[in-house]
Length: 89
Image 1: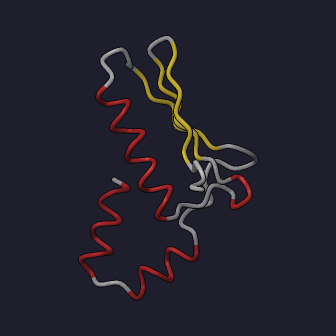
Image 2: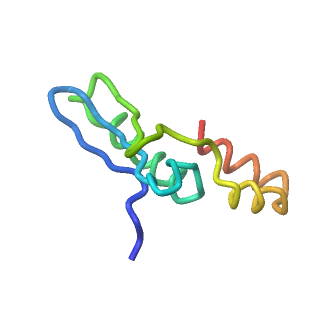
């Protein structure tokens, strides 16, 4: 079963997007990149949302990139690295 690494809620014109990997200090991996993109698309397409709040579950907002992702990217082609970084933007 896929873990929800990003949580989304919307109320009173405010979308709240929460990074949900507290056991890894919300470090960014491929799954979080994909789910964060989906959550941002959802907020962007919702005409009732005026503000997006990005937060992290647990003790840290985000520890940065997951070391495992960095290891994967070091072996990937420059095209693949660009695609992953573009998804973050």
